[in-house]
Length: 335
Ligand SMILES: [Fe+2]
Ligand SMILES: [Fe+2]
Image (tube, rainbow, N blue to C red; front, side, top):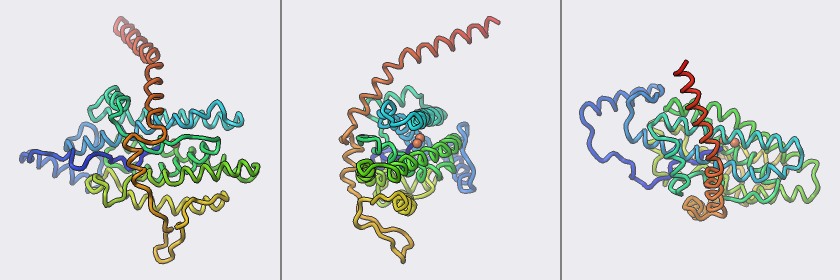
């Protein structure tokens, strides 16, 4: 994964409250001029506090989404139908762990520690993509997650490769290459079931598509007119394309893929609009979105509990790594 428009925070809660001094205003002007020129901001450069906080929030929500995103699919590693599918799924889930690692490291360049961010996630105070609070009921869900969820993630993430904050942009370039493999492996798994599978397997794919379609569209975040951070994020080059435009791009790209696959997307209002040169689609249930984001989705509690367990069970690994690092450092100093 996986970002959904990661700007989920109460309106106005991170606005600067005191007026800027003349020096700060000069620094801000220089900072904005660099962004306007298409330049990048590095960790040691001056940046407005609001920019730093916006990035910490977005990158950490993104990192959390990567590692929580390992859980629904990890559930299927032991039950993958063939050795080949198991190896692919294992590699994909490991990639997501790696994405979390790059992103926590990028967030740390902004002056927060990984422990602090993980602590917020485990205390239920941090957001992550709402999509991972839905259950993976059958093997077809694994394919549909690759196709739709990783597909939506790519749409969201490709523009982030040009994000004005350089460490985030660099992390995204590597992540996007891996996401495209994730999307293709999912689509391939579904294609095999649709073309060579039994009627029951084809039904399984259709059922998974029915359950994941709308949550996938929600991954692009709230509509532009209610998205509280979009305008400022666009101004500062953190965000390049609006939530609604990305959602439309995703729908336009996915409809022909569904046709090739032979599945129906569960939206009676989905149709080509010749005048707009885009597909029209039905309205999204935003009440469901906010309910799930707010902690009341089908699997929120289970996901957080699994994360906390994984953290606690992994304590010995962290202790061993720290002990090894201390020993190596002591040996280096003695030499
Ligand atoms: Fe992925
Ligand atoms: Fe990922």
